[in-house]
Image (cartoon, rainbow, N blue to C red; front, side):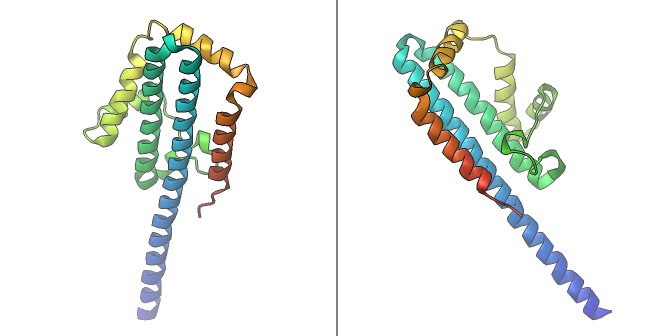
Length: 171
């Protein structure tokens, strides 16, 4: 009986360590996805403002909102992997691991911790009036994205990063 208890204790410790390793792997994988996404938007804004310098202010406003969105997702995935792993669909494509609805973000924004502070920024972005030049920015994005050669370098960099992320396996 004592041997069985000792074996069970060793086995449970192994599973806990494996679980912690797995959680760290998933966090690192998601961090790489978030970083690639933020870099893509930084590149998109840079290309847009190079061609449309009059859209610099609205581009920065847009980029800040995207960063808030992605940083919320980063922090939420970290939290959920450790506390409610069923909320992170790690068996799916990385872009769909986390599906936060408006009410989820609102609830997270009520928390009194770092996740709550990040969620509050994202929630405020979602509730804010659009920038007065938002339509012009979206039109500039559409124009830029309709010319594949103009975005080829940035898009290839993003796609390569995402391929590396997707190739990462976590157990």
